[in-house]
Image (cartoon, rainbow, N blue to C red; front, side):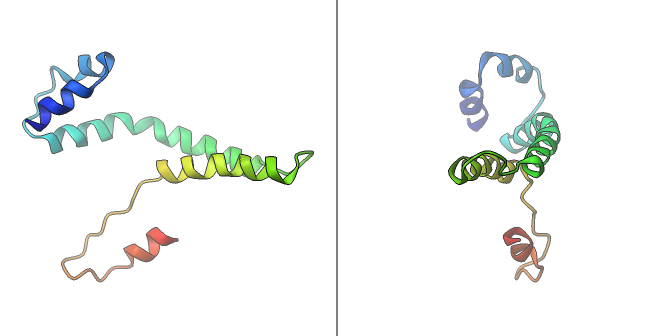
Length: 101
């Protein structure tokens, strides 16, 4: 049922690629898509980091400079992978500290 819900929400271009995938549960579909569509993220992250490091105040006023940074930071944060905890319950790793950092 979840697979049919997902399939009905896809754009026609993506749906064409999904129709012939042999997937029995929604989790497998999600993992397949994550693998397939996250490949371009590495290039985008590299571009954003380059853009962030090359951003300087220059002739911009403070408001323009801060606005440029506030455009880059959220997208960069969104594209970075979220670390997964690998500990047994109760968690004893430092994942929360890594994520906060």
